[in-house]
Image (cartoon, rainbow, N blue to C red; front, side, top):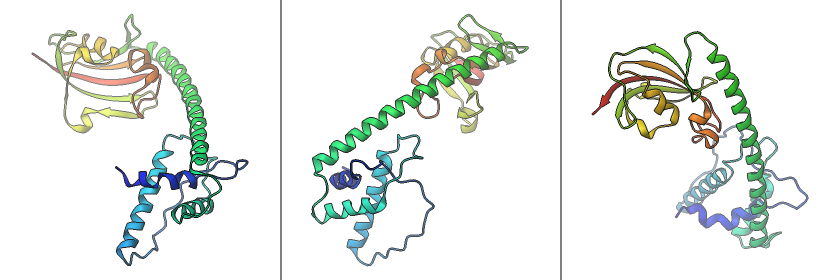
Length: 250
């Protein structure tokens, strides 16, 4: 169990301010050289507790995307923190503090969902415009599903089927040029089952004879759609993949 969990009651109280006050959390500040002296073992343990508590706070608020109007008041924080450690009286009970923070967390989640929805709608519109423009370019081919592709190099081998396993080299980017994955960077081709990948890859790989190099422009509905893929691929992202089909593994 992480040490931070032992500090949870203190941390809950530490975030409490008068009800009419504006909620604030720490803004990122320039790093300062530590001046504390760790003279005895208790000092070392105390300092370690402080690090663990700070990391726990950062983790707790790590999902908040925009902190520009949120800044924790360190004076109030330390006052509440010290009161709990010394078992002095506090402005709120542990239960009241927990309720305040739960409501705050719910509100932050609502705001985050709204921002994610707006971002997803923006990604969808930008992806559609990008694909429409790309489809009009010379050499770009389009399938019935909406997948766009360009043949960089046409191989002479056989084409894989949905049940095959293949070895590929690839690089993936968003339409803004941000790279999110690359086997080239790892200097290691990837082996995968054609039937196990996103729809755009399933379709695209079956178009490629072994030895080919294609560029796929994949609409979000043929990629990760509304769910996205972690922090690197936002919801409704149109994806660009450069793919080399090295061999079919029988």
